[in-house]
Image (cartoon, rainbow, N blue to C red):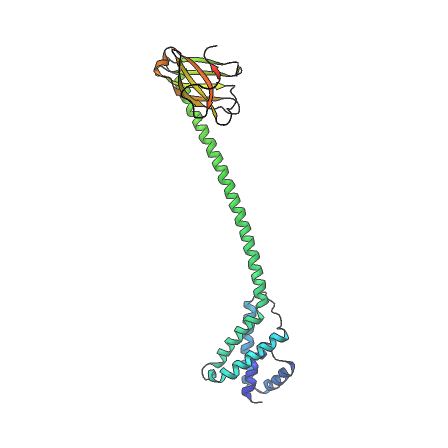
Length: 277
Ligand SMILES: [Zn+2]
């Protein structure tokens, strides 16, 4: 065999794609040919570089069928193309082909494990993102809840401040409302200044049923004038800021009924509290 024929076996040897007889023949030639030894060494270095690049990959030996295909592909390549390419930088181009083959056929286990590892990492990332998203959502909900509490407290404080202002003002009148037989435990105090600015503080009124609210009425000359609606909390307490109509300022009766939640122009429900007992 000529030196050129051995050269064509080197890339197959670098792929471990030669059979035992071919390996023996090639090794015999390598003993006496420094150029082929050097070229084989170059390709083995390239293969080692690929193996390092594959990190912990453990390439498997190709099956006999795959091995035959590699050999066939390499031989076809060298017989059709190598001599023409050799004039330029044939060794390098062929090496590139071998690398491509190696990547396709010997890296597949590495790629498989790589894909599995990437899948696991991706799943872990998705899981931790979900945890973060959940924590973030819980934190937001807590913040919203606390903001709501602060807002409620501020509103309550503002009402109390106004109540104190009204109660402390000169000429303010205080009227007590007592529960009727519908709600005997209920009690309320209505304070209103000389301009009719009023605050109602009720106790012992259970929270109204869904869609309902308590409504304040100013009754003057036998005619009920609608006030605002309010609800009570779980403790049965509620407050209401309102404006006493001018007609009701000097002499009036005050009453509280249960009405639809938006209030009514005239009372429709039972009287729960009244200033007349
Ligand atoms: Zn040689």
